[in-house]
Length: 282
Ligand code: SAM
Image 1 (cartoon, rainbow, N blue to C red):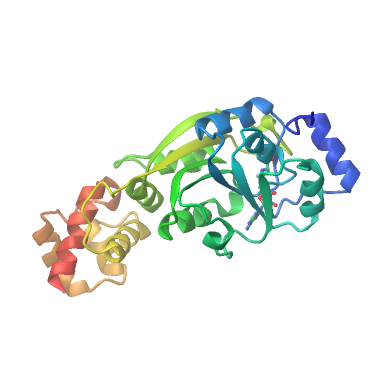
Image 2 (image 1 turned 60 degrees about the vertical axis):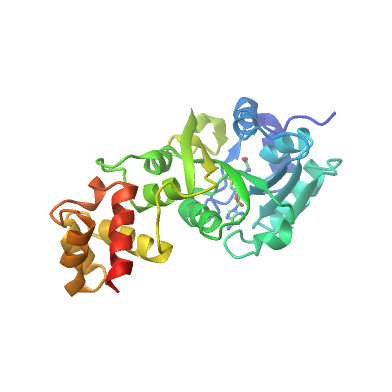
């Protein structure tokens, strides 16, 4: 029986044995609380027969919890120094494949051939948004993403129109998935302890978007422009956002949306009507 890696003394022992100093630059904060690992695995309902993509296995803490379920785990780690560590800490788990690479650069579908898989990760916080956006925009066959992120980022992902947390990330995440904050994780669950609280968020990928969008490209252009300058009115933000200035007022009128409102007040359905009116206009 292997010792559980998610313990402070075990983690420190592994780091010492391999002479590893954690890299702040790579967002290395390793979990040392087994309950948190179990909570993540349970939130993703990982079971034998599942395929799982893990991003940033570190020294294998969460990977071990995932592997124990019998699921097939593919874990992508950027830090070359950790490959030897992972080979050792996960020795004996024949259901784990470690891939060396940058999750933002690799071709994920080459690494996982399964028809459907789950993404489960304690993400490196310096690239949380690009990773989530890559997974969603590439329309990979992901059924659910269960990730540890900064609490403040989790709040932005689930935010509804009307508040300061609501922005382009909220719209994108809610367009592709149904996000839900599962639990909050205190800094002391990691070494080193991050300065902020964290949260585990579950984003269940939708079979269909919740609103009808004729051109996703236009939808996201409108969303980006609307939030790029939050203090401007919607009409002015769209005019400043690289969209055809002449068309803005006409398109807003056709969509039945008051240009004096702010982007942060608009629902997904309202962004969709602007984008759809725009497509009709051009
Ligand atoms: N899974 C481990 C845990 O829960 O203790 C480690 C999580 S740590 C927050 C993030 C991990 O992501 C680190 O191991 C780091 O080296 C790795 N990482 C950072 N940037 C990455 C990238 N671009 N692609 C893949 N892994 C990356």
